[in-house]
Length: 388
Image 1 (cartoon, helix red, strand yellow):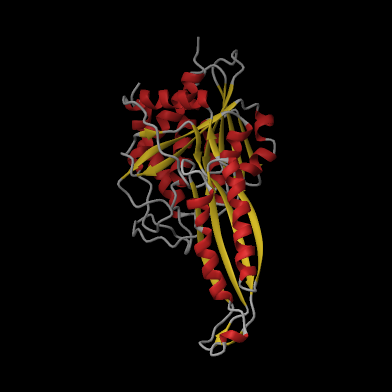
Image 2 (image 1 turned 120 degrees about the horizontal axis):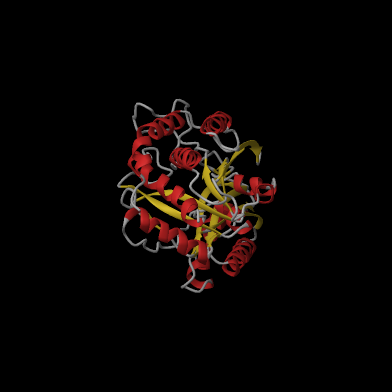
């Protein structure tokens, strides 16, 4: 089964939806325009039920097959939110909102799932129920967690769930997937180093927190190199270091360090968090300073279930006519993890071609990937819940 003919017919229309969403990006849970557009289209498609406000601004559409004797219910999820980035693509449909941009392709994800919903509402060639899920706040807000905590799975009887993300670097319309841990846990830390300020010409009379901070930043790299088994991936990145000083001749009193720890294993996650705290506190103490550490657990590891992963790869092979390769673990986070923790699921990558990377001001979703993405979602439903 190659690309479904209906998506070739709908390609221009879905592209128009995508570019409209791209031009009007919204952040986090403030996806009111996008959510309203999604709900309007789902109703126009003839979905049996459209529910707004799940997980604050999430939208859910219910499509029942022409038979429902199987009693099965499958969830398909797309994310809707953009990023706080100033767009630099120069496209005629570029962001109309300064400082906001669809730099991760969620405009494409939403549009492809809308396309699949339109097709499934027209054909209903399946035995069971399809639940299409449009989620806000994937970019750091935990919208997936909010929807799950709002009763998403129980209210709609979802038994398994599937998701998709575009991926620059993969050929357009190709697919790749990985069983088990796929996207990383994304924790954050905030360290405040308290020294003793003074005159820059008399460092011996104070305790320079900048020197302490420099030692801590370097020592934190020993977590990956010396504390974690090399076969387990871990990333420790210090992303911000700020002093309270503004003058050339004043040693500041405090320095603030912020960063992130990315892991694929819960034991590694716990070890890295513990060592980060120990290194910060003891390094500061060795210099006569004090380190106050705050740790913020983020998204959990996004784990693909074995059965659902094998099925998702099989469907992708039907769409492309090519075997679906395994992908390396990804150290970025993905809050589809909350849905996959609540129900068995699988998350696949669809190729976006040779484009700028995601989260880059020149990134743009490749519209030529739309037919493949729509076909994969539709075939997930039709193959998983075939009509006898």
